[in-house]
Image 1 (cartoon, one colour):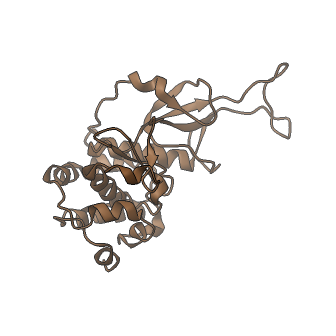
Image 2 (image 1 turned 60 degrees about the vertical axis):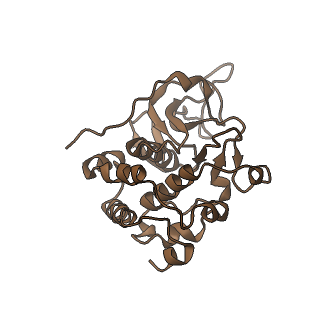
Image 3 (image 1 turned 45 degrees about the horizontal axis):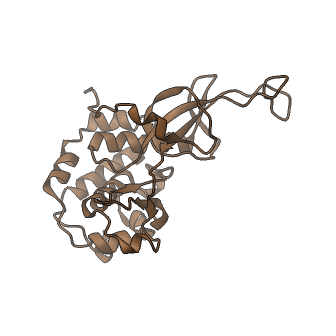
Length: 250
């Protein structure tokens, strides 16, 4: 199996990483994505469990790194220890000591606004970023890219980022792009429909190897992974971004 060729992450941005829970916690590994409240443990050790949503968020960043798109804000998977009270270790309702959990924390993008906001309407989001986000979503089968899940920086070149990826790589999406498009941000589709896909973007998708994709999606079932690879093959047939009507017929 080939070793996944992920770009290096300097770690200098660590001070800009935030989580809703706050606090400083030791890093488990470098990933990308957001948090989530789904308590289903899907990984970790006997001491650390990671929620399914945090796992998917970290997976989104790993795939983004593999593609070299830079459209998922940098995120770390971290160990979050429960807070201690003044006299004893933290305990649950049954008096059992709380164990550390793995959480995904995402780099805060200062000043970024949702693509559907009034403020965003006064700027022109980076078109190539929106194309990359859309193709990324088709490949990973993201059915949750509504207008609040694309944020745009308000300074030139108005970089666009995709956030919230806890529903990617699910069995129910299938090989068709229809479920991805059904709830897609209209403000983004209006910009990119019919636009030519840059050749270097398509080349990055071609360069993604099956062995590396297996590594990036470790833990995902065969059905969802195979469907994603078929959607990749579909994307590689495109020269331009299809219209919504064309996508819904695929």
